[in-house]
Image (cartoon, rainbow, N blue to C red; front, top):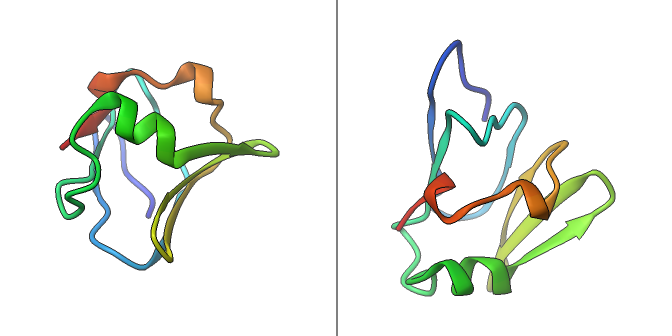
Length: 80
């Protein structure tokens, strides 16, 4: 998934996907498809740093956020 200029909402609704241009100050990732992400702690628990990217896993599904560090993310980067 690639957003445009300004704020974007990336909706992850299953499967394997990739966000290529996430800007944590402007963009939001919608995880509402998944019941397992009820809190910021749940999101952090499902996330790991893999090289320069973050991978969020939900069962066999995964979301890659390219060129982003875990310490850059905040709870308001996500919609649950």
